[in-house]
Image (cartoon, rainbow, N blue to C red; front, side, top):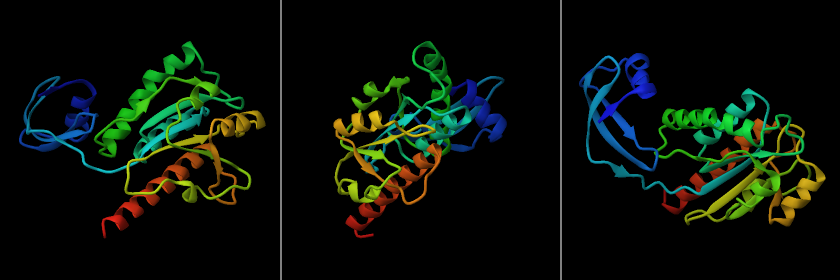
Length: 233
């Protein structure tokens, strides 16, 4: 196995690994293999990999529909959503989204966002890389929903956890999170008509990027705790 480009730079110039060092290689599709560095040349590194194995981790499929945020906040959301287990990330053009990225502008952003997601997956040692869609209009994004559909709501609503599906079984969850300024009344009505149930993260009004992290953390912790209980841990 020969690696070049960004991976080569990371292993040799950031981690400063030498021949004989062992690393874990991920294919981004759920498989991993142990490998040993055989040689390091000017622009490439050669590894000898063992037989790959597939992950057996039980985790819900989480689809994140998130209103587009300004500047680095969008990068932050993509990175943290990857670290916290999102399976698919859909950037959504909402009424209150300040960046207007439908069409060519969104397509130009997507390649950069893809790199952010890929690097975040490597950093947290995920065996897979989340699916990253291009920017979608609100109504188009709603059609991507799978399984239990939850709308992060600023008003009075049940806690996120009570609306989650039972643990210990295959499940899909879709989280709909608004941009700065939240959703319009029309968007909320449209989401509810599409089967989304309003849920709350508590009494405080959170920034959009904070809401993404909090919601994914609640879902992940509840699932992990429930799966551990089911396994007798």
